[in-house]
Length: 137
Length: 130
Image (cartoon, rainbow over all chains, first blue to last red; front, side, top):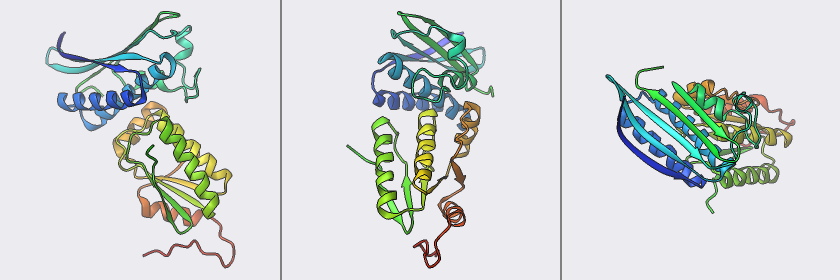
């Protein structure tokens, strides 16, 4: 698998969340995702970027345009040095939230992506990677 | 600070969301709507989201909260103009938007509101259809 290009965006404020959405939209458009698939990955990115500012206060989003054989994809990594998630299984349940939200951010982002990987350590931080491949529903 | 403008159309209020909703805009919008509903005795709120190419759980939560708050103040809320890609994504996200009614466009939204509100005898909704 090749990484064709990459970029990192700081996520500290809600303006950064907007900027992150726009960047993901631009990259998804350039890769040639359908409108629905673009909307899915931008929405997933919005959830995860917002989670960073809610729980960790600051973090980063990394964008990577990737290629596997003939298939192009967009891989996004959200990382922070926030409090970490003590119970991942609980956190991934629909409706579970330790904030004021709807508890759909993590589980929703997973449903909206083709691949989802999460690792977290209490007191250290959290890293979430989502991938969407062009042409995959 | 920018605020989302609220238009009065007879007994209804029309809000068009065209920008990224952040926390302060969402709170300001709910505050302004509350004041306007009470001040004008508005019976319905139309939220036009036809410009939004994305509705995430934060925006969904804001819409649900507005609908709940309006209902307490005896006004119905209808969300109009949801883009198809947004609707598809919302279902997959798992966002049910409970308590929020939807319509295809502003005209249909107004018709829905007019049909659902009960006006006192002698009262009209203040808006004559073109």
